[in-house]
Image (cartoon, rainbow, N blue to C red; front, side):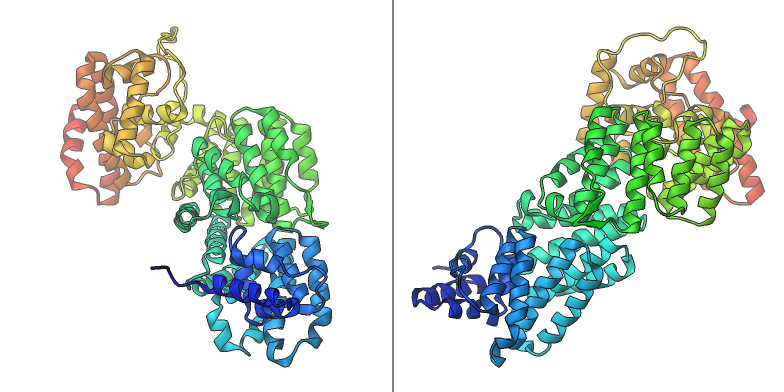
Length: 608
């Protein structure tokens, strides 16, 4: 039994019937009068409706035929042709019959909204949205049968507001669009809305929420059968941006590759700007100067003859400074910074980067004070505090540097912003060496434990690596050295237990060992991991709860070290005893703590 034809198939049959009767004007009227323009815009691929609409003669006069031609041009991203046909349609609109006038006006308003979105013109999109909703209200029954029209209006207007930098208005409109796109036939506008809302969360600094929403968008696209080439690219872009900020380079590159294959990477202003910029940052982090510069060359300075909106121009300028300093080109970074028209927090952070690259920590401190006074988003504040720590350290003020780094770590922890603290990141290399204990108190960071260090005796490192460890293997190794179980490592890195075991086998092979303890000892000998030092738990900012958690971790490590010989056991016992003394002092001062940790703390404090 055949499935009943859907709205698009029924409309296609009506159009073909009119064309078979030689009635081109009637064919166009069937599309526009039934609000079929929405179906034409959301229909994917070369469908029967698209084929039927394209068969309407190009020379067919009248406003409705011009509307159909404008919609067909939009389907293939021929924006200039779409504007030309829309101008003809609006000029001829008064001649349309009164029965079709409301649907004609709603259709032209929809086309104006989509074109305004493509041009990044939020004001024009908002005006077209209001116009379209006013005319839809005149034909409520027809509008209810064509929910994709209202969803497309809202989706396009919300996207344009996002581009313009009005994130509050964008969110309000996009939330309305999300509610309007639950009906059948609204999958395409819903896909766009889900990705844009994820981008709003990212711009507000909520990385974890942005990643969740972007992952939902990608899953929805796959379930709805959208090929990557037909997607907006926003979901993949957001996942790449979050992964880069959180230090997962492989994940960032994978999603950037997908985003670059989407229609949005070629035709959407925001995606077309941020995909090459994010790729340039990732390549600069990897030390690929040629690749980073090639990606930067693809970042547009303007779109459609219009400059980038102020917020995006600032983000691009700061990103270019980041990349140019990362590839060792301070002159290029200075030129990019000079191009910023505003002197707000992004400019101050970029200027501080340049000052530190030029060994001028005094100027860095001066401009960072301005940035922090403005209370920018958390991502910018994290970097500002990291830069402040570097500047204070260069000025010979270790206490102030440690305090600034502590502020950065506290701000970064909730969203796992690892990038500013990585040795390959824009700001953190020297801090990792200066404050290993403070950084190691934040196990979410993952980097300090894999910082290359010289052996304590100053002797040569054994050369036993068969081949270099991957970044993921180094992260797993760091947690192995911290006595985390396989299940804990999997949870901490968002991996499956089997994947962690695969990484462990790779580590054993490259270190030429067969057991976990041997791998940790060999890695220490190679300088691949750093033993936890007593100062880890000596940081004034540590809470009793965190100290208790570290105590239990150190107790696990002591149990593992017992099989590693007297030296390893003595080192672990020393660290645990120091930790227990710190815990006891903290609990005594605060009057609270973890009761399960008190017996061990008391026993080892007495014996330490």
